[in-house]
Image (tube, rainbow, N blue to C red; front, side, top):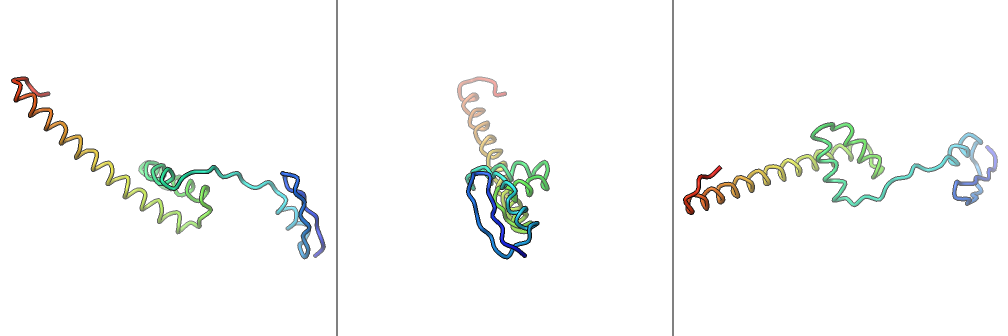
Length: 113
């Protein structure tokens, strides 16, 4: 163990005591840049992505939030359930609108499609 001085990518110098040189070098590595994403956007993206590749959706959530695997999986499962409910709601709404359009067409003597 020895004293170490670390210079970060942004030029900030940190004096660290009681670290090995290897640990100090590991700390000096540039930090991973995480995009700023709202939780609502993350939920929508994870829900849609999980329909195609659940593992990739979990990796996305872990990368953005820093959560552990279990927390990320639970979040993706919830987002996927919300996305499925939203898709079902849209289908029901589309069916309702189609029925209303057909009824209006019949009332006007037109042939509904």
